Amino acid sequence: MPLRSVRIAMALMLASVCALPQVSPAAEDTSGQQAFNNACRTCHMVREGDNRLGPNLHKVVGRKAGSMPDYGFSSAMKEAGFVWDEERLDRFIANPDEVVPGNSMKPYGGLSSSEERKKIIGFLAQSR
Ligand code: HEC
Image (cartoon, helix red, strand yellow):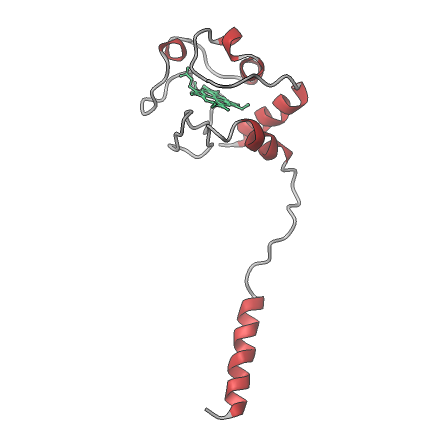
């Protein structure tokens, strides 16, 4: 191959590398996601159907507690008999046993910072 076409080929290769999408600093507020990652992601995903140690939290705001058939909830959670709303979630992640006595969300120490809870609930409410 003549040297000139080698150079052109290399230039084309470089150009295509540079055209890869750049990882740009996130413009939107990611603190809710971060707070969720810190406190909940060890056990929960928000992706639909993705149950780990805990059930997935896809569209949890508006979902009946303990109602997903493909996850093995404690009987306490199955019989909780309410629909998750923001207020209920706030009290639950502050102190799960106060809202659903006998639940199996363990080991989880509760999140005392109302600031963090608010961020997480905002994040969950958006995951729809
Ligand atoms: C140590 C693992 C663990 C951590 C950490 C954890 N969870 Fe859970 N979570 C569970 C388990 C296990 C259950 C099922 C409880 C049951 O069946 O009684 C659960 C249940 C829930 C439910 C009820 C879901 C439903 O469908 O009724 C919600 C809501 C929830 N968790 C939110 C959170 C949030 C928000 C955080 C972070 C602040 C969090 N959890 C942190 C393990 C965890």
